[in-house]
Image 1 (spheres, rainbow, N blue to C red):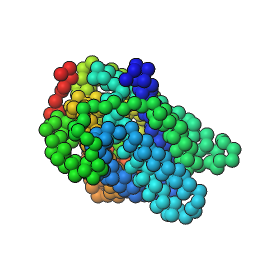
Image 2 (cartoon, rainbow, N blue to C red; image 1 turned 120 degrees about the horizontal axis):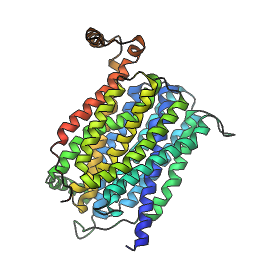
Image 3 (cartoon, helix red, strand yellow; image 1 turned 60 degrees about the vertical axis):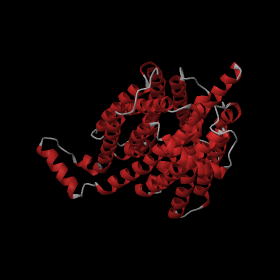
Length: 443
């Protein structure tokens, strides 16, 4: 590929991280999330079920689609299809908010279309991640991944700032409200995805088979390839540990805005400012961690990141003072950007090029299966661990006995603090399993 085409291909790949984070920020984390949970008063557990259902489909289907894209060597075309379907589903969520009037009707329809939009969004990311090898070399893969993640978080900020005036009712002819952000988000997702659709040039690697295989042949062949993939034990160990990392990370992304509002008392404007600060921190963390990964290796870098996650989640579970929550949010941003930056070169170091699509499908299986369980754990903890629960009373009495006073204000939202604490435990389990992942740096 000529150098000019390589640069344009990289620009296209980076632009997609910018585009898809707009969806993640505005739909998964902020405006749709708050509209469905706060404005429509949808129970946390129902939202968790919708999100988890989409992730079940990703977990079941993406290893197959990833393997098929390896055989056909057409990851880019699958990326385009999944992205467009995600955008269409997002538009349907927004239309539902204006067409239907009944609260439960809006909730049910919104959750169905959200599950579809999120499935196609997450599925597209699997193909996008597998294209990293087409726009980087083994020497700069960490930096390239870091640039993508960093630019993605800048996209998240841009998406927030562009739609917030609409939410506040500052745009003529558009009614105010969190639901007003949904269709503009879909439009922004589409506009900023166009460079990726046009510019990415997918590299072809050595074909596993001499001829292209039909769709059902690929499905039947997947089982045999999964058996062969088990030979890459380091990659499988990473995918298992990543299951627990993703449990905590994805759940934190989904529910941290609700936590900031209900536990720490942040207004919508403060939440926007908080996420801008956290997102800038994530952009910085992604760029710095990519360089560190290239220098000391992705395994050692990931080890540092996960320890940081455990510390900051434990801190958040006990913080009552808003300024401290701002500090914690900055660290969350740094570790969030770093996690996804380092995970990609780590997986690339553990598998051969011709198996990248298959393993990124398995990466989606690992992470997205975790994203099924994590939100459900959060929803169940919030549902069960309320102040009136006898177990909670026992824990509070024990804390009081050792000199830790629990105020009535803290007790009123203690179920959310237990939920964050559960995320720290998931990270710890993942870290224990991660010890046996081999360090292939400089091999």
